[in-house]
Length: 430
Ligand SMILES: *Cc1c(COP(=O)(O)O)cnc(C)c1O
Image (cartoon, rainbow, N blue to C red; front, side, top):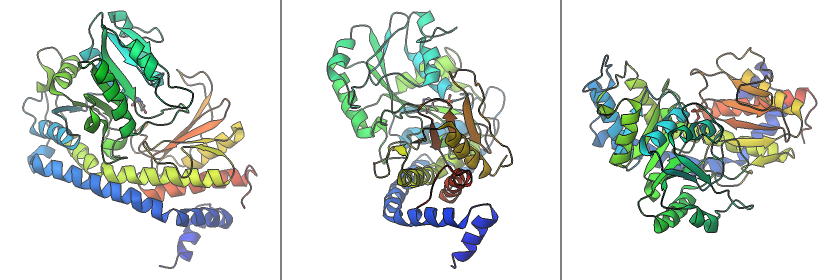
């Protein structure tokens, strides 16, 4: 194909020839890297289809249930498919789980009892969990129910503080929570292999402790998941990787049957557990989204790697860097100046299929200690497997970028972000 028409199309959408050429050169240089990502996606695609076949997914599974949702074969089979994919005894995959935080809260509250202690051996958990746990006092927190909390930070170089983890484990320690993704921190994301080492170490000290992994943004990035290296529970959001961009809501909890059941008793009610919960017609998008999740995750990863290479080449600090191996789909770029953060986010917004004409501005969002600018033009509100970015307006003026349902769209997003920086004279192209 003549690529001149593609360049022309970019131009029509507002991308300057210089920006295009710079971006295109970088994209060309990533071919080998992308082949490796495609190999992982191929394996994971087979893994998902294999699970669907093994569990005998049928047309009837795609139908809607209502009311109590007793005998919802689609829901029950999908839970078997998640369990087969993640190699667990059981799974809970529900539209009644409102978001990732809710899934984590249900898994924790379902498995902890008054007097138990929760340990995070990987530093501070995701912001929203501070109130779930009660690190920040909050109505209904685990702390209010008599569950205590301990935390061991990572060492300066990002490694585990084994000595202090050992000291922190005591007779009360019931559950260990391990966050795979860096979230909005600057520590490295944990590889599945490193999570496995940590779990081995912990189980050596206390065999019956429940090891739970917050798997948000990590699903299908590697060929194995934390449940392949000893995690008792993994938890995530369906408006991130495993929903494949199609799930309109939902969360999942997969792992040992006993612990998944405990979470289900908390989600619905003691005695009812997994038996109730109508799916109201979301089954088809849950199935189809899970089917697409490996390739959608691959697209988002390519976008993240492209962004890292573009902005590193222009002299900005990027985490992960341009060549590092990937364990989640988040890309951080440190711009060092508020106007650059704003220009970047305006570019991501301008590239969106929905609400592209909206001009995002920084605002004081609840729960944040500075103004934040967010770019999202998504089919599903707040979906961060779709192309999206947020930037807190405070030093070091970094943006966190993730998602892209297709690589081509993620590429357009980064090209557009660069265009906005270039137009304002905030970057110089080589
Ligand atoms: C997204 C995310 C969550 C949950 O966030 P929600 O917005 O409630 O879905 C929890 N932990 C991590 C690491 C996340 O990335």
